[in-house]
Image 1 (cartoon, rainbow, N blue to C red):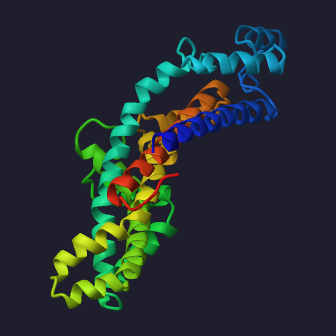
Image 2 (image 1 turned 135 degrees about the horizontal axis):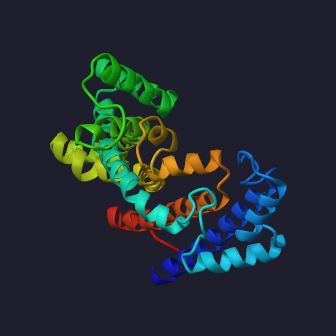
Image 3 (image 1 turned 180 degrees about the vertical axis):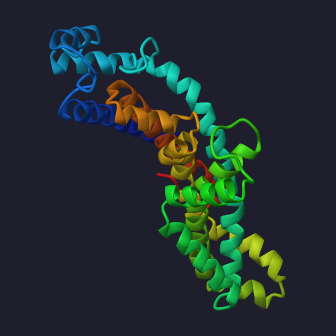
Length: 305
């Protein structure tokens, strides 16, 4: 197992390096520049700004400098938020997104797994059909549309929930529900299909023939095997929710990392875009490695090679 994890770590490092390289190339291949949209800026002032931030140097020289600095945790200075480094912005904004994303992931798991089990155990009944409809809507409706509906209904019309910021615990309800809706629906569908497959296996019929109660057979045998596909999905899902939903944070004016990422794209803040992309890619890779460990803990029969 140690050999396997060392191999995965080596592959993770290579993957992060490839992501850094591709992000750098794509950002520099985009037409225009970060200072093109500046108001009332002369060509001389634009050249001075490019020289200040090192954008006048050859592409390969900038690439080597960026990779070297990134390996030391330095993603450069933000091109739009003057006087602040990308690392400082990420460090200050990430905890906000992580808190909302963590609550959303927890809510999605706490609702999705039970709903999937209930739907599978009541296959063809009205409650199964109801859960399928809710799960289908959750997958089909984009998160920002659902967030807008929540904001209009509970914030504007009813006035029950605040529509921007994170001042009180009530401020967390809307973004957490909006972020959790899609993964909850996806986990529900995954859990339902996986549970139906497990319930039809021979060992489940054997457990039932031996007189094992439905509750015990469900949690001792069925759930342990049916939850494996959910674990596969939960790894990347947690990584994405921890960094925050870009559009949801923008709609609700939440000072998280997602909002900064959207603003960076709009303002062509290349260093901020690259730094955020690298952080997200690293989280996804780390969560995938953790998923492999959880796989082994849940089902010891799985062999990691």
